Structures are given as structure tokens and as C-alpha cells.
Length: 172
Image (cartoon, rainbow, N blue to C red; front, side, top):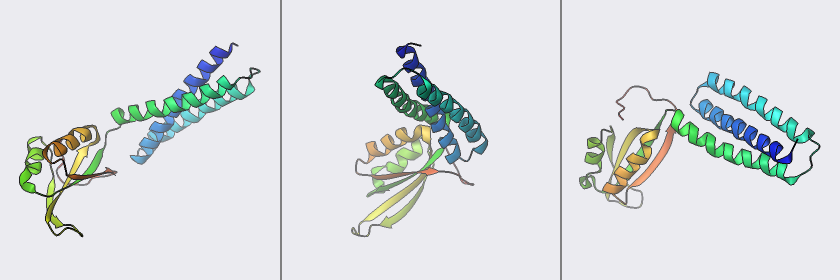
């Protein structure tokens, strides 16, 4: 078996198994145990075949390790890209803005998002702030952040993963 063929085989195997592993982790986080279990089984099965091939060959070359590590890196990148487009989910977004009259809430509303607004003050700054709470589809998060920052470039934004949402109004 040629070195090039072996390296390509190892790289592609790792690309697939690490992509599956990344998806498995995302499915676990989202509470989809059955899918995570299936992806985990296939992931480890492919990993075993790749490792066995890499360690049992008579070919001695650093390129085997490079192909193995390169497949891992590419698989991580590919798996995260796939999970972002395949796995639906929502994120909780909190926006703190100094002046509600700067139309942040109106922009959010006109764009079709739902949100709640709470009047608040900071611990070091006695000025009135407004905290906007919104649940946003993870595929629309970048659009939502641009919408807010285009309206208020100084808005403070935090984003957290939402595992489960009960009741309420969710748009977009």
C-alpha cells in the first residue's frame, strides 16, 4: 500500500469520525440521546478501523501522524459547520442599552423578533438602562446581533444556549 493512499485513507476516516463525534456532542447537548447514541457508535467504529490501520501498517512515516491530526482538525471544523446548519435550536440573548429611545426595541419588533424589556440600573452607573430579553433561532443570531449593533453600537449583548423553552411567544 502506498504512503499517499494510506495517508488519504487515514485523513478521510478521521474527517468522518470527528465530524460525527462533534455532531454527537451537539445532539447530547440538545437532549437528543437516541441520535447521539447512533452517531457515537458509528464514530467509534470508524475511529477503531482508522487507528488499527494507522498502527498496524509496515510503513514508517511522520506523514501518517500528520494525516491523522489533519483529519482530526478538518473533522472538527466540518462537524461544527454541519451542526450549525443541521441542528435547530434557540439561544437566549440579553441586550443592555442605555436609551430605549434609540429604537433598539422598535428595530427588533419590526424585524419580527419577540422580546421583553426590563428597566434596570447598573451597579457602578446610576443611569437608567434597559435590558431586552429575546429567544432567537441560532441560525438567525448573527442577523439579530447586527440589527442591535446597527441601532446601538454600544449595546452590551450576551448570548447563552437555551436547552428548553416552555410557553411564551417565540418568533423568527
